[in-house]
Length: 290
Image (tube, rainbow, N blue to C red; front, side):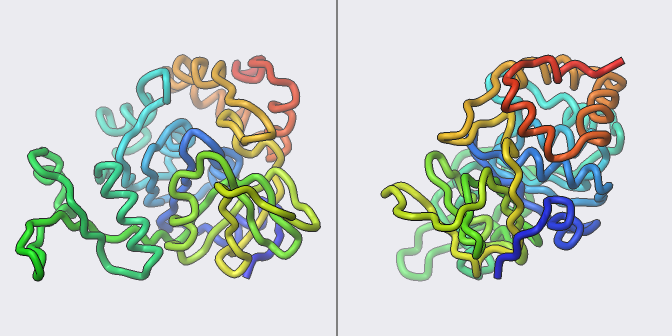
């Protein structure tokens, strides 16, 4: 049953060293503020998963929080590489992480299977590709009814799912709409969940036909963090900050510059900085202070 907490308390109570965590979002509603709080609290040895890891995973990896990443695509969307990820894999800085690479279809099915309480996902896929050669968790099986050869992967059942949403009511029911990716499935598959929201309201009221409502009994903790998806966008609240993604490429390319930015903008900052960034909508905050 959902409890409304501060972001600091939600992370402290629900995310521990060694946990597996899904920070999910797809272009829209990416939980940047929550990931920053995990970094501030110094969590280590995490197994992180996401269909499309981007900047928050670059930051988590560069700050030494991650042991393993399960993913389908990794990059700075619209710009290029995740440079802290690449430095970890190629040079072992700050340490070398383990990778488990899948297709988008495999991960979507694996979250669905996890949400259903199943041990694995079975689907048509991985035909004529090389990923099974480097990922031992990709298996094949024969359908007992048709004889068709199918792909199978372990279900994704993270210890914690972390998402950002538009709003929640005071009972902890959560409202999302727009591009929602696999946020719902990740929450339903997880043992615990943290949902940051733009606002907490008395009543969610009528919802549109494409909306998703996560009832309070599916959610562990809700935290109000206005701007908590920045630099991604939150439909109806703020647009995507494209300048941030472009600037991140240069910031993350250099270890010293990366560490300075993280010190000034994450370690020495708090969740309120996200609301300030959305309000100002300028890129001055991207450069580390002297």
